[in-house]
Image (cartoon, rainbow, N blue to C red):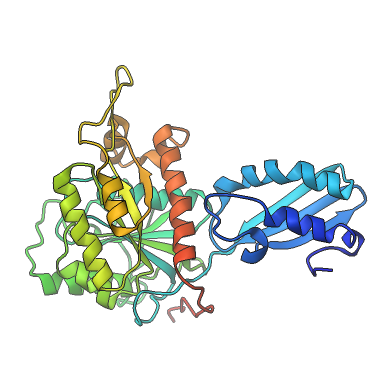
Amino acid sequence: MTPYFSANLSQQSAAIETLFSQFPHPDLKENLIALGALKKVEKAGDKLAVTLTFPFPFKLGENTLKTALTAPLLALTECTAVKWHIHSAIATLKRANPMPAVKGVKNIIAVTSGKGGVGKSTIAVNLALALKAIGANVGMLDADIYGPSLPLMLGAKDQRPTSPDNKHMTPIHAQGLWVNSIGFLMAEDNAMVWRGPMASSALLQMLNETLWAQNGESLDYLVIDMPPGTGDIQLTLAQQIPVTGAIIVTTPQDVALLDAMKGVQMFEKSNVPVLGIVENMALHICSNCGHAEPIFGTGGALKMAEKYQLPILSQHALHINLREDMDAGTPTVTHRPTSAQAQAFLTLAQRVAAELYWQGSVIPDEILFTEIK
């Protein structure tokens, strides 16, 4: 009998294992048995207890799993109720380069775009908050040295990092995220007139000298909001930052797609896995009548996905609520959690976490944080 079944389930163990192995879900490229998610099935009287642990957040799939498997399990085991225990123990995954891990960080996700104005920062912030909402410990690094926007978008523009030892920075805690940005260290109206090498050096310093592990917990995901383009900072990311995977944000219009394709090519040349494409502003939703119109065109992301054999991770509509929420420092995922816009970001977050897991191999646990004495 398989070890995760209690002794009084020996006769049903093969049938139960088959039941779990046949559960379908779009975020699962292996079945629950092959994934090693099923940890324990116990029977006590007429009650059944099932424990599953996923290597990535699976919160959005929990209800589907329970709905699909509860009745068949009860029939097989002759029980009257199932108590589900579903957890995630988020894995540390293979990095794109041989650089050592950033202290306190398991996985780094770069959110980038070929050009500005496509809503990349809006996507990055709401993605990070959605990852938090589905059970991950998440941080953000604002890599846009010249135009930092995270302090405003997260409602934290008046906060400043502290230092416990005059060598490291404690990140800002905003909206449940651990965040750092050059915007916290400079006046709001001050322009950073720096050449590329200086900007890249500042990015590396913020990444490596921030105490990402707080309260004894390492970050499951650090989302880096990249500046647009394929210049010095992007090359620094690919060559000197232990990034796990990248996401390309674009709009459907041709001029954005041309630049987004350059971003894909740059990451491919640098051996950074591109998890997929996020198409922003796919539709405009009228706030008065709800009419949806593709003002930036249609089909662009699909053509790009087919050309580079990449998945379209999500498509997001342009809605006034998104703009108002970001300007007010109250991102949509937290400010309007039941809205269609927030639900789209939650779906994106689970898919990104799953794609990140499936594209790379798990690496052994590392010492991800150290105490400053």
